[in-house]
Length: 418
Ligand SMILES: Cc1cc2nc3c(=O)[nH]c(=O)nc-3n(C[C@H](O)[C@H](O)[C@H](O)COP(=O)(O)OP(=O)(O)OC[C@H]3O[C@@H](n4cnc5c(N)ncnc54)[C@H](O)[C@@H]3O)c2cc1C
Image 1 (cartoon, rainbow, N blue to C red):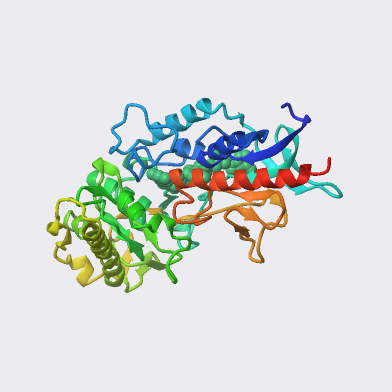
Image 2 (image 1 turned 180 degrees about the horizontal axis):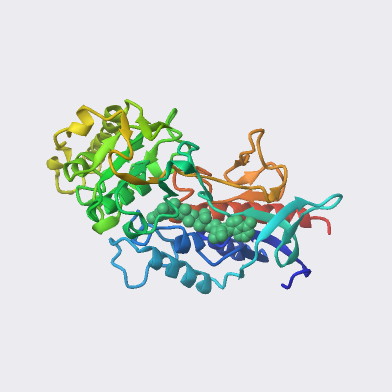
């Protein structure tokens, strides 16, 4: 395509990450001619929006598509971010995915008086009967408007964090203790920094229990199939890590190594950061989540007569550190030597380019398992699109299958009668 060009395809997939590739594979299976437009490179976010030492959160046997294993990697190991990129590049070649890189989709609108959509891209116009938005679950970094630039602190989002050397000398406040926040805080602590970690509500599964990784336990216990977060738990993040070979995230152990835990970060004024008095409660809930998974796992072992080694020591909870029993409710950042803040506070999505009737009154994608109310418009890869696995590597592949099947059925109706 050259700028000013115009072409027609049956299906247009926007985004060349794991979701776009999964979509391509299933569209090919269904014989649907398509193109995948990617504004940067395949798996771009794994290349340029992740920190240097990041490894996958799940082991290689699990965090992959069904039709290809990670080459040269122990199935129980955790792929580095570069290995993930390589994996998806190889996958795109294997399935001969029609990906065009460096093409930005600027606007997609429904045609007037005829079916289908018109996409304006940085390389011309594409007409398509079906459009799948595969632009990612985590697109726009969210930083609460709390600390003004004039405060003289270096502030960055977890998606811009690369390594400890990138930050100015001094202590660091990491806000958010989901998988990104805990891993970054741990890396900073190991590099010799003083670290404050602001811990909100979280789930905290054991990395491994009775010889099996937690991804296996979630699978056999049917938890990956959950269709919606538990009531009231919509914002609960999951604290899990594959770093260093994979260890259970243990906030008490982090504190024992010198990390200062604080509650949710709620306000900033006159150089002082304030924290909610919820640290003990958040940690206790994380513990309860951890222990409940052990209970369910034990019950599963008994019920199914499995021969998995017992692991009573997994229930040992270390002593509560002082920062947990007498939590800081405010911190004079300069006084504590804090020179930077890493906000591991999540992401939003931006569908400004998708100008179709597929959104609710709050502007959120409105869909059922990715099938929107706008005929022919689809979403893929969003958190909880069909279930807990939807935004993860292995889960998106199955969701893509459902959408491709839906497109195949719809084109059958469209073709009827001539
Ligand atoms: C730090 C971190 C670690 C993670 N680790 C794991 C893990 O270990 N295992 C796991 O299963 N999941 C993990 N995830 C979750 C998930 O797998 C990733 O977020 C993954 O990148 C999502 O893939 P995707 O294809 O849905 O979206 P993305 O990777 O975001 O890909 C979307 C693509 O669309 C392109 N794009 C966007 N808008 C346009 C446009 N208008 N025109 C053209 N192109 C466009 C982007 O450039 C991008 O390449 C992690 C997420 C984060 C943030």
